[in-house]
Length: 458
Image (cartoon, rainbow, N blue to C red; front, side, top):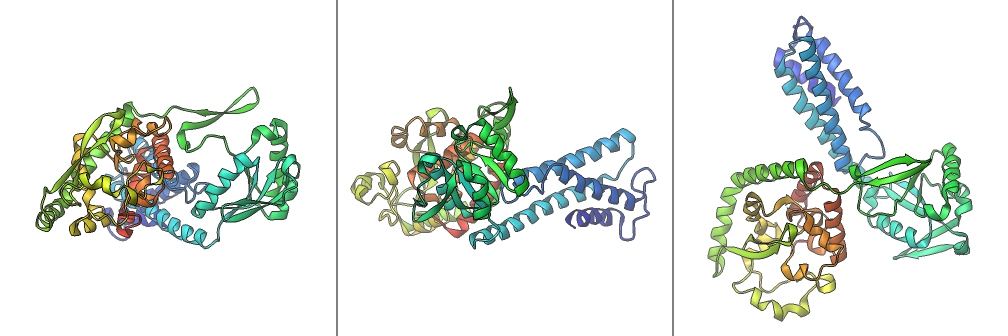
C-alpha cells in the first residue's frame, strides 16, 4: 500500500489526475510505468529479505535492508532508463523515491513501537530453550531476561549429564527449569513449547551431536541458533565460511580508517553545522540565562581524552557554581558511580537553578557541537572520559579510545547516568566493535527520545 501510494502520488503530481495514458518517456503510458515500478519495488524488497522475521524489530539492520533495497531498485531503474533511452520523467522518480522510502522506514518504526509494546506485555515472544553448560548459559539467560524487547523468553535449559539431576536454576530473582540433558533436547522442545533452540556449548556437544540436533529439529518448525562465544560483535564483521566441512566463523577487524572514517566525518560536520544553525537562538538564550543566574563564565571547559588517548578541551554550558571542581573532593562520599571510576551524584549541591534545567534536557551538552566541527568529537561515539578515568582503564575498556568520543551514544540512549560502570563500558565497546552510519542515525533518533523523556539525566 505504501509503495503503491508513493508511486501514484509521483504520477499524480508530475502528470496530473487521470494521467494513466499520458506518456512517461518514449511513448510509454504513465500508468504502465507506475505499475511496473510498483511490482519491481515490491520484488526488490523481497529479494533483500526485508520481511525476514529474524530481523523484524532489530533496529539498524532492518532499516538498512529497507534503505539498501530502495536505493538498489531506483539505481536499477536509472540504468534501464539510460541503457534503453526510455527518457522517464525524472520528476516522477524524484517524488516517488523519497516519499516511498521515507514512508517505508516510518511504517517500520511504527510497527516496531507496537511490537516492543507487545513484547513488554509478554506477547509475540520467541520461547527459547537454552542448551549448554551453566557457565555459558547463565550470561545468555541474564541478558535475554534483562531485555524483553529483544523478543526472547527463556522457557527451559538443557544441561550436561553431570548437572542433569537439578530441576531448576536460580538466575537473579527468578528460576529457569532444567528440562533435561543434551541427549533430551528434542523431547524438551516439545515439552516446554520452545520455538528457538539456543546452543551455548557447541564444543561440549561435539560436531556430530550438533549436526544430529539440527536434523532432528528440521521437522519441528524450530529455529536453531548457536552462540559463537564472542560478545558484542555482530553484523557485517561476522561471516560463516565452510572449511573442510566445518563452519568457521570469520571475525573481521573493525574498520575505523579509509572510506568509513571519511563518511563518518562528512556526516558529523554536515550534521553539526545544520544543528548549530537551527538552534542558534536557543544557544544565545541559554547563555544569557546562565549569566543572569549565577556568577562565572557561560561555558565550562573540561579536559577529556579522545581517540588515540589524546586530550582535548570539551565545551559545555556551565551548569554548576564557579569552582565546582575544587568542591569535588568533599563529595566523594556521595558518589553513586559504580566501582568508583565514574563520579555521579544524583542531587549534586553544586548544580545551579539554570544548570538543573539544562542538565535535565541535556542542553548543557550543546556546545560540544563546536567540538564536532573542530574534529575532536563525533555526533555519535563512546562517552568522552576524564583523564583520571582513563588511568583506571584495563585493556578491555581502553578499546573505547579507538574512535572519537561522541555527544551521544549507546550509553546515552540506554539509561545515561542510571547505567552501571560495567554496563556503560559494554555498550561503548559494542558500539566501537560494530559502528556503522545506519547505527549512528538510529542512535541520533533514539537520543532525541531519551532527552525528551529525561531518563537517567542528572
